[in-house]
Length: 212
Image 1: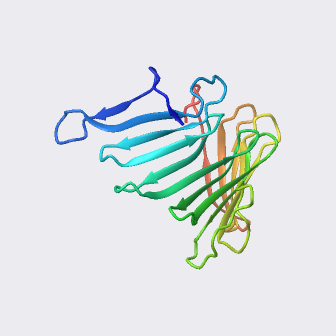
Image 2: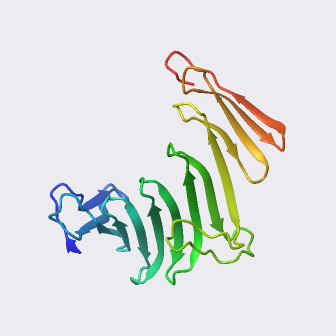
Image 3: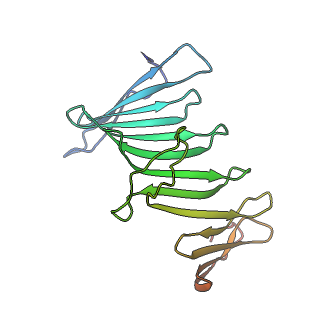
């Protein structure tokens, strides 16, 4: 990639983080793009150095969506990588963390309805201390249910144009229910239900400016 030096890009940040009010450089930025002259394809990466000269690199695709973050140790060796996998509609499908060897420690996979609402969030990781290793599908859009520990939360939305969250269903048997003003998108009631029994009720009221 070629370094891209743009007049409207931040080169460094300074802040009074020392022993007095003297500004200290906290971050320095360098930008790289595969084709700096292109007006439609912006694929590339950004290198960031902190106040201790530790490096972090951010990679993005031609839609300028973040695809990977690489963190480095003080000696310059790779520490870990965060990966972001996007769908054709621009929805984040998978966000997973791997160490320098490529071993995946955690993954959060998202499923959407036709309106783009998240209807299921699956968090994979060693939640019990006895989990099998996390494995991803060939296209890396999701983790495979291979016996690895997973915590899945489901979400239900209103069937009107507002797409308001009405239920949050946890794997413990707890359900959080939300109720709204009949003509507005203001939350009026919240119920926490555990195995069919209401455990908590919260009611909301608003003034004329819709301030709670």
